[in-house]
Amino acid sequence: MVAAGNTPGQEPAEGMSFSDIWHILEGIPDPEIPAISLVDLGAIRAVTQAGDTLEITVTPTYSGCPATAVINMDIENALHDAGIANVAIKRQLSPPWTTDWLSAKGRTALEKYGIAPPNAAGPNRCPRCQSTDLTRISQFGSTPCKAQWRCDTCLEPFDYFKCI
Image (cartoon, rainbow, N blue to C red; front, top):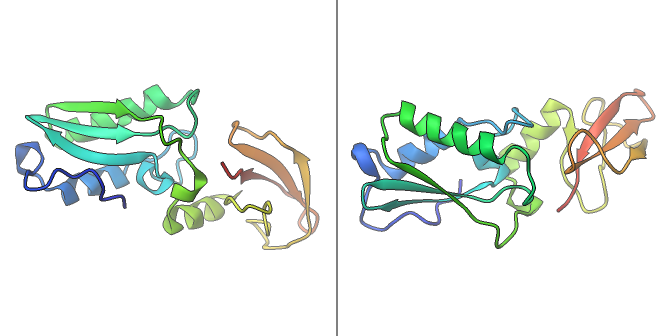
């Protein structure tokens, strides 16, 4: 969980703590990879209070991410459902998102979902059978941030989340 960006000495609107807000945000799945939360993806960078408005700073996985509007809507809906009336989403492109921001919990969730987590040398094992006998099928997968690989042991294709 990213704690940076919490306004010292000022709690969020409607009497909720910043911890409560982060807990709500941890429950919002990435729309393209629903096995991982936006928090574990590292896309939610800060939660701050500006007057009566709760500001959520979001860095998309890449600047042209087609899911950005859905992500923003999901954040606003979750916070509104929790009783927070005034929410502002701030888009932060610098520094750019990096796979280094994925949490350990997020990496584990990706693998359990069948997506090999990012590794500088490429996938080190099949997320299904754990074999290390792998072949790259295509540098591009189901989304721009993934590549397509195949396990030569179980013969199943799988996505690999590229290092960015």
